[in-house]
Length: 411
Image (cartoon, rainbow, N blue to C red):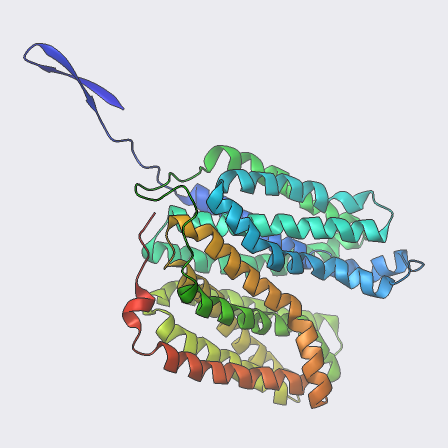
């Protein structure tokens, strides 16, 4: 912006520095909505899996391919998110987000007209690749647009919204599935509605002065801890989401309404944990991580020894509270020490670590159950592992307040 001024009857043009764009509620809502796309891909079609199995009963390997259609997007997020982060840092955040949203809608709705189970699984692979790009871009842009306590609060809100969205999408998938197994896939078209305001109201952040255009080296030493713990965090986060209904069924509680109520209670506890993180984020991972692991260990321990519905319910709530706080703590632990030129790749690597843990969770539980003789015993082993991690993080992070709590140069 230039302003003409008069000095000694001579017009002088004074150059003003451009004003920095300030993100607000509109940008936050759009980024949170985009973040929900990965949740949509994970849970929406879960209620119609039996119908899909019946539809493709004559397809060889149907009993394997149908569950893979549900879980393969999470695997692809885990594998592709680091590469999406590379594109984010090297090229552009916004353009990758917009392309990912459009392709997500196209591939997500493809099963509406596909008649081959193999082709449907292939489109689900594509959906996972798009989700990797969308998640990495949305999380990176939250880190770009805001800093400090507000950034931590909004990352906690991202977990909160995802937890609530998972519950809503699961219910919506069941309702839409009543009219046919294909119907829930229409919901993927919502990405086309969201991408329009994204195109006009989001922006690619300006590269800060002094930040080189070529890729900066990643601080692997500071990323290694958060990403390794996040891999395990993905296992703990997903354990009861996958196995809670089986635990209740094993105790003779087969009523769908009761199972749904306990699952909803755990989801609400996860949301409450995300809210609590937003209020306590200033304490830093040195304080929060041991507390979160203790809550998770206590919850899983109760589920492991439970012989009745109330004990399982209390254990599920404690686990949800712990993991609801855990995920944003791990993310801010990694992100707060990354600058603009590193943030995309760091976020992608963190996202990949988390989703690989989630994908491997059922396999790990099955392996541990085979060794321990039962599902509840395997959950107990994971609870003990969480307790050990509480001690490890307390001892490892003690005395590192300055390094842990330091923010990277804000960009």
